[in-house]
Image (tube, rainbow, N blue to C red; front, top):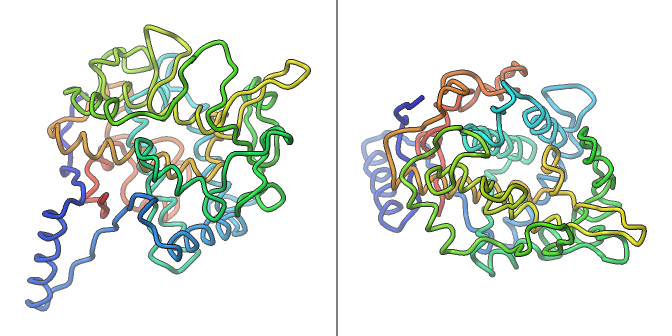
Amino acid sequence: MNVQPRAMSRRLTPLTFLAALLVCLVLAACGESQTAPRIRKNAKHLTAAEKQDLVDAILKLKATPSPYASGLSYYDQFVVFHKQAFNYSMSPDHHVAHAHPTILPWHRKMLLLFEDALREVSGKDITLPYWDWTDPESTQAIFSESFMGTQGDASQEYALTNGPFRKGNWTINIFSDRPEGLTQTPHPYLVRATGRYEADVNDNIHLPTTEEVERGLRIPTFDVAPWNDKSPRDQSFRNYLEGFDPDRPGYFHMHNMVHTWVAGHFRLEDGSERWGTMGAPDVSPNDPVFYLHHANVDRIWAQWEEQHPGVYADGGGHSSHMSMYPYSEYPNERMAAHGLSAISMLGTQELGYLYE
């Protein structure tokens, strides 16, 4: 299915910022008001106060009951959303939020809901930063002890032992239901073996480069048949960015590669395999870095939308106008904000935010 986007996404360039500022000044002079768009910054540009506000809000989400379901924290509710979507299939070849065109609108909706929740519990105008994987300064800013924490301690199976989300201060409550998931990611605390990979595939685990990102942005079509992890990477922007490789099953690129890089994969002395927290795909939002990672995925999609306006293609595998599962399963005024369908997620400007 091809549908027209509601609005073209825009990055916050100096010219667009100046134009937006002038419009606001004119409206103010005319006695009219306009809500300024949220600005998502590169993590390296956050002030110390902005970093602390975000950390405090995430910790408060973890301690606040979910408004959607009983028995969950507000933070863990988002892990459950992701887990439900990961484990739900419309057919053997079409899922909801992964290996399918809806991965990008589904996660855009999740980021908006998460950002709204941060603002709700903190009472502050918090906006999610993004992690530019191609920028070493952005990576350094994120994986610092004062922000998201560093790599885990190798002597403790790579448990995170520093920063605000360290072992003893941040508890994982939602575990994978996948047979290998609970075996390979059993820890009730964050595990990060960044850059370490001891599996038999993916012999070149690395963060995506500028050249790799630019190559994806040049792909003119959003997605193509068969609309899943088998879609040709040179024809499907979605599958290129998501990171599956039809020619080499088990190899990861781009978005998938970053999950693998953060989590790490290692073997214990008894030969058993372990993944870091971000390596359990259904419950990977247990690590707060997930949101900064996906903000960058969303930013790249916004760039692609700007460069290739006109269509969002899903092949009819999941109607663009249908509510995305499981969002419609949770009737709530918070959930209804911004829309529930894939088509309602097209274009960041109309959704009220921009990337710097």
